[in-house]
Length: 45
Image (cartoon, rainbow, N blue to C red):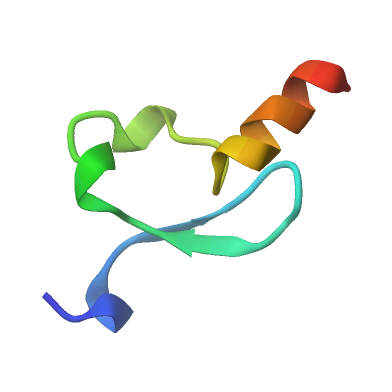
């Protein structure tokens, strides 16, 4: 599948769009952050 056809979301911390990744296949509905860095920042806020 081409990257432009993958589903995408907006990160709730940094506001950047990020695309679906294979490692998120089973849990895409619950993914909120584009990276571990943003995930860690959410714990600080």
